Every structure is written in C-alpha cells, then in structure tokens.
Length: 339
Image (tube, rainbow, N blue to C red; front, side):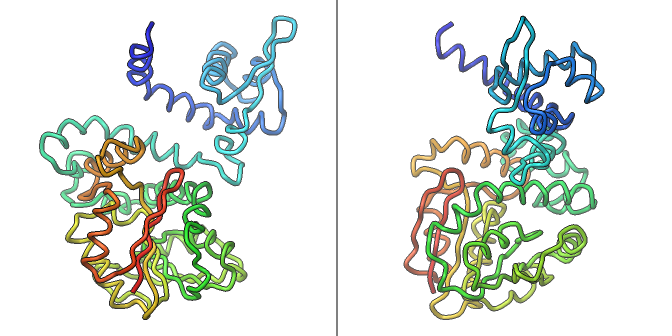
C-alpha cells in the first residue's frame, strides 16, 4: 500500500483513533499504568472491571498508536505508559487533557454530522445542534452547568500545555496590571502569575462563568487573581496595562472583533497593549493543519474563523493598536499590539 493510500486509510478512520484514546483514558488505563508501570492485559482488565478480551484489544490498539508500550515476556505482554500517556492521558496528571478529550468526544464529535449543512449554508448550525437560534455556541454551552463545566475544564487543560509558551513569547514584565478578557476559571491567569509574579490579573467573564469558577476553583492568595463579572461587549471592562484575548477573537466576525478591540484600546492605559493568542493561519491559508481544523469548528459552532497574521494585523490596526508583532508557537501563536 503506497503512502497516499495509507494516508487515506488513516484519515478515514481518524474518529476511531480519538475514541480509542478517550475510552482508555475514561476507563482508567493510563492512570493505573502510571502508578503500576507494567501489567498484563488480564491484570488490567481485572483491576478496571472490564472483559479480558475487550481490554486486550484496546491495549494493543493503544500500543499501535504509541499511547502505550508493550514488553513481551514468555509470550505474555506487559503493558506500560509512554511519556505522552503519563503526561497528558492519565486523569491524575497535572497536564492531563482528559476533560478536553471528554468535551470533544461528547460535544464536538456528535455535532460534526451537521458540517455538510454548515458548508452549504456558510453559517453555524446552533439551531440544529442545540435546538436554539443563536450566533454563538456559548449560548448553548452555558445553558447547563454540566456543559459549561466540560467546556471550561477542557480549555483550562490546554493552557497547562501551551500557556507558558504563549505568555513568554513577549516580555510582559512591564505590565503590572493585566486583565484576562473571557478568562473563564483562570488557567491562563495562573500561568501568567507564575511567569510574572509581580503582576496581578483580573479575569473578566460572564456572571455564570465567574460563579462557576468561584465554586469549582480555589486560588491561593499568592496567585493575585481576582474575578469581575461582565459581558465584554456590553459592560465596561476593567482598566489594565495589558489585556489578554486568548482564543476569543476566533469566535466572532470581523465587525465584533473590531468592536471589542476598540473597546479595549480605549480602556487601555497609555503604553499598554493587548496580547491575542490564536492559531494563526499561513498567508496562503493552506496550514497549519490545526488552524484549518479549528476554522472548520468555528464555521460549525460560531460566527468566527481562524485568521492569518495580516488579518489580525488589520483588526488590531482598525482598533487603534500600533507596533503589532506576531510570534509563532508550537500550536497557539501570540500577537502583541501596543497603544
């Protein structure tokens, strides 16, 4: 089978790969092997209360995708975690991506059946997916505590992997007062304080988000993080030296983005700025693949899209920001505009 056909096969079955990874994580395979190191399929099945046959097939698939490793001794396999599984797939890991996988499995995956309609119509499918007429997915997500918590927890986990990289793309030590606009439970704010301990961060988000954040997240005083309730389109934003907009602008059309950025520009202290973090498309729009995939999700669920560096430059310039710089990251990129 040539490489092109192999690629076709992999993509045809990509949804199965993600389900295998999530199933093993949900059943506790990676957590068990994180503590026990090497175990037989039979022992793993017994400890986790599954059938031996089903577990062995799941484990072998995970080995094939390099989530697990296996050592053969006397014709019996001993299974163990890879570094990736220890770091990201075990629920108990500080950098676990379990909740993000859960959100994708239970929310994103079922919605993909509406993608052909989104492409035909050129607009999101909130009414078909959620049963409500809305321009944005958050109206549906925040209707239930369970849905919003899955979404918030998933976003928080991604910043445990990428937050420090985004926040260290530029030296932010000269911005003592920072406002994380749409900062949810403060995962990125926590990373910010760890890098810039002399700064304080105010998280500005919807009342229902702030309420849930205070209920489910406990910050020690050392983090210097506070919450303020508000709608960033309707309510005054807190004054700050620097505003963080992390994975916010891609949810909205150009007009709304300029509206929000202009509001932040007016509220920003002289010499301050805004730090935008998004997956930035190449100028020819053919990559990176992660940005193309997320742009499809934005079409399906929001009124926004992923953009090129020149498009973000245009939005920030229209709002008044100057000296706009872009720095590429491993997944999320950083764009800094100054007042």
